[in-house]
Structures are given as structure tokens and as C-alpha cells.
Amino acid sequence: MEYSEQTTAIATAEPSPSAVSPTSSSSPPSSPPSPPVILSPCAACKILRRRCVEKCVLAPYFPPTEPLKFTIAHRVFGASNIIKLLQDP
Image 1 (cartoon, rainbow, N blue to C red):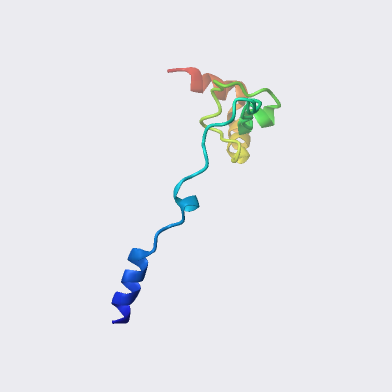
Image 2: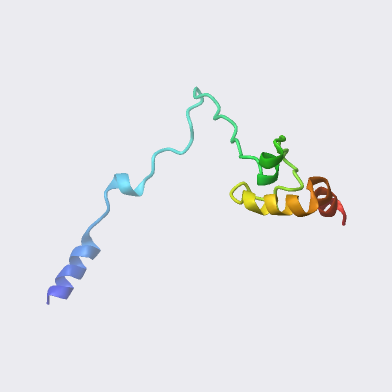
């Protein structure tokens, strides 16, 4: 019988209104616009010390979290040859 009593207690319990309805998601009109999201440069641009543009050819292959990938490829092929290989269809 304890199981049925627990089940009815759970079934009849209603969540509090604050847990059900979230706060308003729209921001007030007087708030300043949020700052632009700054993405870290790809590993290749970090190592080459250059600005990583939005359409960087190297970014999909060398994420910022894995700089060792680019370091090894750079030692073997060189940066300009890697870029040439990735740009050729």
C-alpha cells in the first residue's frame, strides 16, 4: 500500500508557478546591445601570428584547441603549401 500512497502524492503534487513559467525572454528596449561574440583564432593563425578571418581556409582543419596538428603539418609542408592544397579543388 505504501507504493500507491507515494504515487498519488506525486501525481497530486503541482509544480510551483515560478518553476513552470520562465521569466520574460525579451530584453527591455532600454538595454544596450550585447557585445559581439569574439571567437578565438584557429590554431594555424595563432601559430602564424596572423588575423583569423571569418572565411579562413585553415580554420575547419586546425581548431584552436589542437595547435599540435598545425605545428606538425607546418613542419612537413609549410604554411603556404598547406593553404595551396586546401584551396585547390
